[in-house]
Length: 604
Image (cartoon, rainbow, N blue to C red; front, side, top):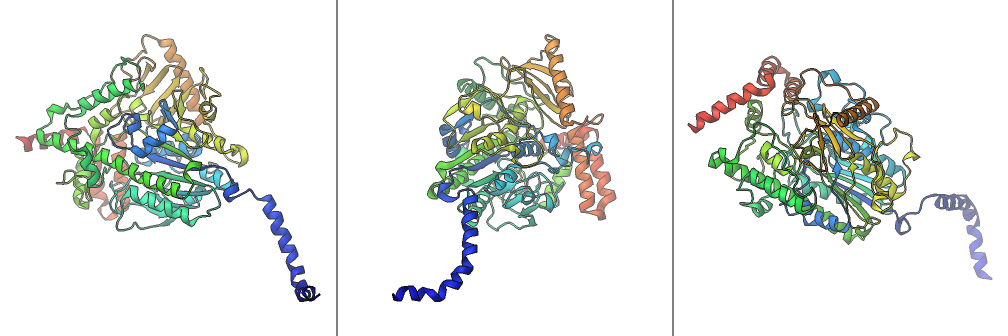
């Protein structure tokens, strides 16, 4: 009888706790299951920068990418996936499932003309009502983290923490140095890194790919372990400046010594062998005025071969650190229940670092070198240039900035639970990734208010319920700064703006001519008219603005850099503005002629 008496003094305390215990039980019954009982998959998006369709090993590339290749082997490898020709629009569409013009990021600020600035769709940051995957998944009970390049707004309040990310370490600019905390272009005064919306400094031992994975692993440890996670990892590889550790560069010594024409032929042959293009498909034509490899002096050939070796090494370094993340997830027991997306934002970067007096001046001021004794290390402003970019983009034509196949046909790999090993040959667009992930997880896109998605779920294709997410009469289109493409069945129309293009629409049959070598405009005018009408309907629907008369992206970049520099350094405004505006005049032709004269003088 002693035991019951011992409990009597505690009854008042127990009575006070009963309401609290009851509320806790009710809350537990209403909340979604967590921890081991929450079977929803984790999601990791690995976004490479300026990586061509055939750069990855799984697509026949020279770079060693064993960890990404293993994901391709156990999942779906897409061969007809298209992004946009520039990074920010692709990133906006990837994260939202909405056409870029409806997100506020129709182009990138570096090439934005004054006539479009501030117009609907051209805010250069995600506009109100635009929800990201992080917004939607966080509301569904996921923890959401991000580390890497953002470029969807430059102000602190436009960083990832304002768009659903619980933790983030984000680069606001289009790029930055991979070894140090500094800008890579005179457009940016510094490298604008933000952690959770506050300006942040990089560690002293920084290398971009290693840091991105280190930060992701740290955020995973610091967030709620009972929740599934969404991790967005947009790498800087292989955006300029192209930089890599020496141990990776050594793997490619001599690999590119034969030059870009040989690489184009090799990739074209591999593309046919791998079924990326039909047997006998013609090789894509080079853009006009490109240099022949043998026209370069021998020292220049050696330097360009080294540059391409660093490019492959930077991609391998990214894959190495992706492997570290995979190993961490395996050790944590989370790998088998993680869906991986691997892709690129656009095709390879054609810009050079040796044909601009303003960039040369920037390099001298900042200590960058385009031809050091050991390329790839700190202080190296690496680039591959237009000829290597066109070779890397094979079997497609041209490269980044343009809606030709080399600019927008890029790799896409989806792997993880519920995705069987397969090759997907039906069309897919960058806007389809977000709705596919939500469909796979079971999150209704209409669960939150916001702009509706324009993309399609690819899950019916991945599960064998449909051959394509698009019907034979449904068009797919992209547009960035006048560079445009529309697909309908086997046909495509495309328009390429200056400085490389002429602004004229062309028609191709991609089933026979994936390299866009033969314009069918005169032969099949009715088909072209039908696709042009479909494009006009698309442009009206999403709010595409016309480009100003005489628009040239190279000239516009120069003007925008000049305007930025005037803001960065007002003490030099008058002289600097006059100098830069003069340098970029006439599309930079005078500048290029001057540089050619200087090179001829040195070689004389």
